Length: 470
Ligand code: FAD
Ligand code: NAD
Image (cartoon, rainbow, N blue to C red; front, side, top):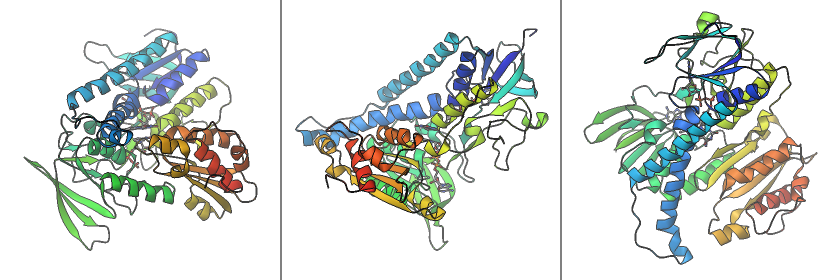
């Protein structure tokens, strides 16, 4: 291509990459986006956030219809599931969403190049020739690596996406397995485990550590295990899977307790491996241009997303930290601004995490365990949804809101919620924390009645002084 060079070439069209491209174009930079998938949107839109939430919603409705409609006086026969129709709806949600990204690229006059991008020099990205396509060489002032992440494999448990699946296979099963073993009690394990349990599978979750959602606030993690257990998920904690044998009828998993004292085998129709994700940097040619990576394969960047090679930046899952779509988006936005000579900043302490099970689980800021470890003196305010009028009216009373605030200054340090719509409720805590609010600020903010968010107000009242309605 003898064209004028680009100002920015972004490699990877996930939430990090496509947002970086939009922001760069908005700021007047000539921008190209290289993506090896046929569709834009990355892991999140194609095989992550969006399809999983579509299936979570469908399976939630099925569970409500079968188990809670009767409590509301709504009677119907036993509901059945048409898995093919459910998958078709999910695929059409994904299809429409990825088409939306095409629209945004056109609107912002971003050049989209399909193919695997390799950095051939600090100012050059080559895009491999594909079926019927010529190799392209894109000259550019800046490169943003946004190549995302991939499933972390488990030695001895080989993923075939049929009997032993990753999240990608778990999003496309053609029928409800009678039994499913999920390896890993993290976000994917409990979201996808919930989907298939609701649809009728007997789900067992095997976790190496002694709790579900390790890293979350301890009380929330305990409550989550209790609620999911009540819903029918069985947990085998402090257990490691040592091997898997595929047979005609399913998979036989070998397991042993972490202390090595007991061993057992377990049979399952389908095994889901969900033990985390690792950075994806294959094919980028990083060693050739000398971009440094950590010993775990993450691209090394400084506080401005700059790698050790001037003009090459990296964002999103590929640089580590919370592997979340909205974290990647924030980084894409700020990285483009920094390249354009503006200033930008992310408060990583105010990035929320949400698990879209039912009840939902959400948190932002410090956990109680982290505050203890840091030697911070704190106050706790807690309010259960069982005392919230809207939750009672909705018949959705599992869970609570927990607010942690500084004992001296009253500043909010962390908010953790398990309960209905926790993923949306957490957002007011995020805004409060971004503005450096105190528990009293939140407690004295009027909340519409009857609303689930009143539980947040009450927890803030509890942290600052005393809750009213308990
Ligand atoms: P990605 O979305 O992984 O995008 C990277 C893109 O780069 C990919 O499309 C890839 O094909 C492309 N690429 C890689 N190498 C090259 C190359 N050399 N040339 C060209 N293209 C290349 N996060 C949330 O916040 N909320 C959720 O609800 C949520 N649900 C999830 C559910 C599942 C099942 C999974 C697996 C993940 C989920 N995540 C969720 C995590 C979220 O998907 C990721 O954090 C997010 O996609 C990271 O964005 P990214 O832009 O860094 O990378
Ligand atoms: P995760 O890190 O959330 O959970 C992995 C779990 O597997 C942990 O509990 C870990 O202790 C356990 N584990 C690790 N090795 C094990 C082993 N050998 N045997 C048994 N257990 C083992 O990872 P995930 O659930 O795979 O999700 C991957 C990433 O995708 C996460 O970083 C998450 O942020 C992102 N994601 C986010 C959402 C969301 O935001 N709603 C949804 C899905 C995925």
